[in-house]
Image 1 (cartoon, rainbow, N blue to C red):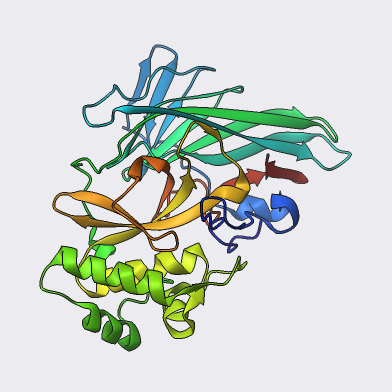
Image 2: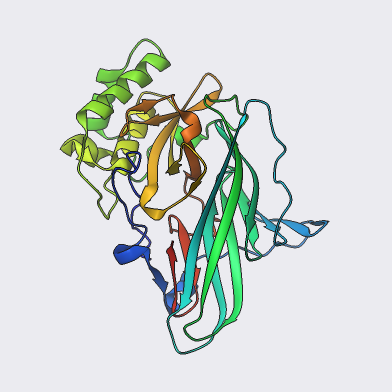
Amino acid sequence: MLPHLRHGYCSNYAKSAKCQVMGGYLQTLGNSSAENKTIKKTSAGRKILILGVAAIIATAGWVITLSADQPASLKPRAAGYTIAKNVHYSYTLQNQTNRVIEKAEFWAHAPVKQTANQRCQDLTANYPFQLNSDKYGNQVLHFTFEKLAPYASRIITIKANLMVSRSANPIAAGPEASDLLPEKYIESDHPEIRRAAEKLQESDAIKTIKAVFGWVASQVRYSGYAAQDRGALYALQHKKGDCTEYMDLFVALCRANGVPARRIGGYISPQNAVLKARDYHNWGEFYVDGTWQIADPQNNVLMQNQDDYIAMRIIRASADNPLGTYNRFRVKGDGLTARMN
């Protein structure tokens, strides 16, 4: 998969499609995949804790959990997360060559460990995996297959048990300094965005957020899937985009008004579901009154139906992310391909 393809589909409750990869969600890496950053080994002096069948290893920014086939619950149930939800999804890996792949590797996101409206209780898969997590709660599953035969394939099935909440719960993980700063695609310091933000500023944070949300939801036109990220400034200037542009512009206008905001990638799933690539979606979150609240301007959803949203990724730059620049999954191995089923 090319590193800079879009974050995902724009689901208007399954309104439209966004490809993980061009031409059937296919990711292919040749020898160049070796250049992608992989997880660093633990440095001397770090502790490795053996807990039953699992080992937890601290890295520079991520924690690696070596799981058994069916790992124990990751988190106990917590007050406020009262609705059980189960989702599963799968990928097909294939050796496209007539040669043995000595070591085939695959990384994919799992639901975020905890947000204001979800807790990931446990994860299971039909193959052993390493569970990598960062300080934001992002989780990445790492699968390794030794000596994958010519033209052989593997189907990986992942199941996640969640507890979700219709409204946002207070959460200790508050905003980072970067949640108020400009970054690539979030040009909150650009004069045009600053002028637009100033016009939407109200007497308090909630009123400002509602004004920003209402303006983005009403002024930006959904224009269908686009293969490349275009960013907040594009959305402001052209008044069109897909879920990614709606998200970017909302986040940029919030930040320009001093409201911490961040980008989220995941799925809208009101019930237990099989997650599909075509349903991938982007939305924003803003921080106010001690918690993160959901804002999905493409679907005109603000602080409502929060149990419908499953966050797979808090989109923040991280040098230690084992997926590197890949948005949803990554493979390593000459001639190895992957697609979400």
